[in-house]
Length: 313
Ligand SMILES: [Fe+2]
Ligand SMILES: [Fe+2]
Image (tube, rainbow, N blue to C red; front, side, top):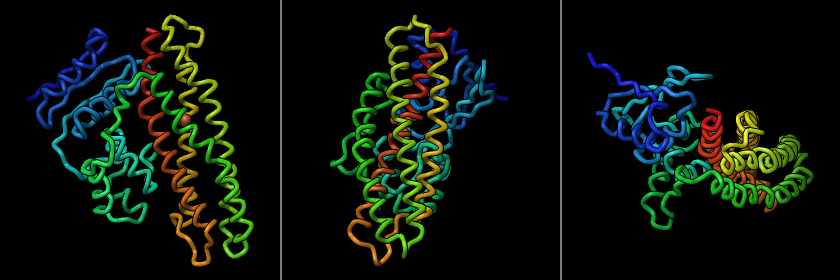
């Protein structure tokens, strides 16, 4: 009978901990596994393995905190049918952009297969696979940005200067367009008034969300990185991350509701140019927001929580 090795992560020096775990994984044969014991969630290791090795592992929580984490890491006998959208997005940022383009939620509701994702947005699985393959074959695309190896200050700088900036620049544009389209076409298309009210409330909440990240969470993360001995804000990162994740979840649900309301942004025959521009903008906004949330939920937040948990040891 095979025995499964258990690695006590805390018994390994932090300087070589991830490297040791990666080497242990590399030594596995397909179908073999090992267990990690840790006093905090080892999720960042999962994303590091995905990024470096591709989607060839499963990460099963045998115990999920609050004081002890036991995770079964298994090298899979590969079956493409089991690959989830979240796995693919975490391993390659360029593919996350493809999901975003089709309005596929890969950050909050990403635990679905490619087949299920394609069905949700009414395209064939082949179309989706072709688009995903194209980003690695087409030289116009930059190589995947390796966000997993970035420090938290670089990640925050990137998120704020790229995605927060995009949101702030585009909120007034969408507000104006949705108000105008609902006013002109609202009588013939009753769903437009609901879309207007929902969109305006969604954008208002999103502005508040960005404000909380920029003024509370991100400074707390940067302070943690800068001064590991400053315990004055102990616990703040963990609780703020929890709130931000919940808000991301609602944003994902609202984006999904807008898709239902507009039949995946299908224009009626009577649509004018402003109507078409509104739908194009909303699709673009959704794609950007999904990538933005993915970077926070799957890369920045696990790193920040790990920093806080290491400091409180
Ligand atoms: Fe953000
Ligand atoms: Fe966020």
